[in-house]
Length: 352
Image (cartoon, rainbow, N blue to C red; front, side, top):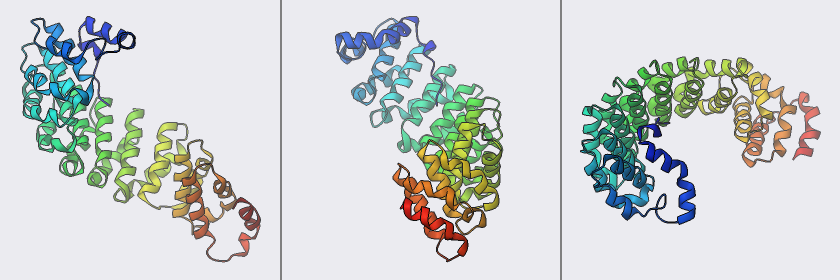
């Protein structure tokens, strides 16, 4: 979700990354043919390009490089902005607990560094602290106003990683970003709100508006976020229903709307069930399960009970969760005797 562009590194590092897999396969040591100890010695080189490459390489070892966090933290004070950028990114890749020691420095870079690249990487690294970095929420919220879109984007991403308790207090600021001129900022704001689940309920009106965004990624993540918010997003049911019924060509977004709707709860069965019917045959079992759950939620409705024959094949579905959802639907739909159900019994018994 973050825009880290290898182009901020030197041409030498780009070449190393390009041929890294070959070198590692041939030499089988450390990262890109060098041990961590060798890369660590390069952190003190007089050449900023070497320091930058070393920080990048060490960070790509992830948690395995925990022991180098203090040396990388020292590079956050490097006079070269590209070294500071690589060091901050590396600390994010390594993650906690070691990177917690750099938290205050990262906050300072996020607030004051003149390089947008450094501020962006600092935001990313703070997000990688997860709930352990909750005390950085204020600094990240302030960075949502940064003039550089990539900083706003990474600050939004990072807030989403800090946990629902943080998002409860900052979802209004993230909701404002759903109108940001940059689509990647809007997208990651929606992603972050989705991470909050019910704690992001106050942002539901803005997420509903985002379902009509010009950018597919924004629409898709707005639908996911509304589903994650759950019953507290009930006012989104009509908009999601219209999307399912009218925008099947918007395939990825349509899929997420189908999955989101039963997480929120029942609505107008006469509109939801016709829109959900095509999803019963979707190749993705998660979509079939979600459609079956919507039928279950509306099992007492005339629209759902008129679709009994459509639901029977799901009792033999390859996916057990789909079969369970279909069985739950039939247990509700057929609980009261009705002569109209007579044609269903024989195929239903055969399916069972």
